[in-house]
Image (cartoon, rainbow, N blue to C red):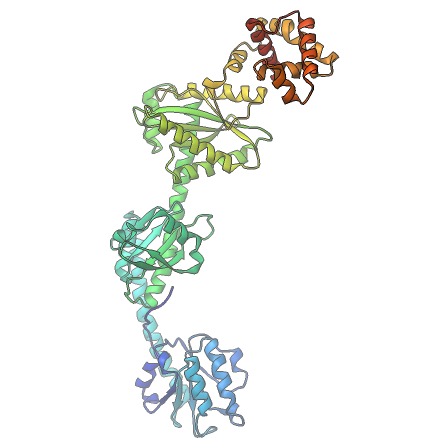
Length: 541
C-alpha cells in the first residue's frame, strides 16, 4: 500500500536531540520526513553490504580520508538500499563534506547531515534508539487496540459489513471487499461510490490486481483504489480495496490494513468451510430429491429450508442428464465439473443446480415463471452454452425430461431424462439439447424394447434388408435411406450419393424385387423407414 504520511521518529526529529543541535542538513532535505528504524556506524569501506532499510548511518569519514570523492558514489548506493540518512562527523578525517557528495544527496533524495566534531556516536545511538523505541511502542499500542477491536467484531458475529465500518473509521478511508463472484461488501462511505461501478470495472480490477494501485470510474469522476489480495491461493480470491479519498494514512494505518487482511482471511476460510458443509448437504438433498427418496411435499420443503434452498410454490422443474459422446469423465472429474458449473450458474444468476447422481452429471432447472416460454428457452440456452464451454474437448448433449408442474414430480422428470440419455447412447443422437418430447419414433422403439412384437418386426423387415445389403456390399440399404431422406426423389438421391441416376434406379428396382414391396406406397415407406431406424439403433432388441 502507498503510504501518504508517516508517524514515528523521523530524520527531521534528529535536530531536536541535544547531540544534534549544532548539526547541519547539507542536502536531500526533501526526504527529511523519512522514519528512522535503526542506527548504524560506518567505519569500514564495505559497509554497503551490511546496511539495512530504515537505517540512519553515521561516520567519521575515516574510510574516505584519502579519497573523499568516493562519497558521491556511495550516497547513491545507500539510497538504493533504503538508508534514510547519512551523518558525517567532520574536522577529524574530513575537513568538510565534498560538494560532489552534497550534490549526490540532493540528486538521490538522501538527507546528508554534517555532525559537529564533538558528537559521541555511542551517546547518539542510545538517544536515537530510545526515541525510535518510544515511537514504535506508541504505534504498536495503537495497532494492538485496532486489531483487538476488529477481532472482537468477527468473534461476536457482527459480520463483514460491521468489520468494514470499523476499518473505515480507523484508517479514515472507505473500504470494499470484493468476493470471487464480484459481489460487493462496502463500508458506509464506500456504498454510494460502488453504486456507480459496473461489473466490467470490477472484472478489470480483478484481472489487474497485481498492480496494487488502480483507477476505476465512478459517477462523478475517476477513483483511485489500492488493491490487496486476501486469500491468494484461490483461483478467484477475495480483494480488499481501499478507496483513496485524499485522507492520508500513516504506517499504523498500513499495518492495520495488513492485519485486517489476515483477519479477513481467517473469517473467509471459516465462511468457506461452512459453505462447503452447506453445499454438501444441499447436494445430498438434490440427489435425494431427484432420486425420489423424498416422497411428500412437506418433507421436501423442510429439507429445502434446512439447507437454505427455499422452493417457490408456483415453480416448474426440468431435470437433465449429460450424455458424453466420446469418453465420459470419471466420478471425481464429474464432481469437479458440477462444482464449476454451479459456480458459473450462480455468478450468472441462472436457476440451475448441478450434481452427480448414479455416475452421471445431472442438472435441475427451475422455471420461476413457467408461463414465459421465452424465459425457459433463454435459461436452457445459457445452461447448454456453459456446458459446451466447460468440456470443449468432448462432445456433450443435455438430455432433458418432461417439465414437472410441481416439486414432487421433479423426480419423474429425472426418470424421463435418463430415458433420453439411454436412447441417445444407443441411437447415436448428438444434438446439443435432446428433449424427451422430441424423440419421436425413437421413444416408441424404446418403449417396445424387449417385446415379442419388436423382435417379430425385426425378423420381417430389418433382417431381409440386412441380408440383401450383405449380398450387395452395403449399397442397397444406404441407397434406400438416402432415397427416403430425399423425399423419394431418385435424381436428388443420385446427386447426394455421387453416382449415376441409372445406378440409383437399378438399386431401387432390386430392393422392390427382393422385398416384394412398392416403394411409392405410403404404408410401405413407413414400414421400411421404421426398419431403417431400427438399424440405426445398436443395442435395441
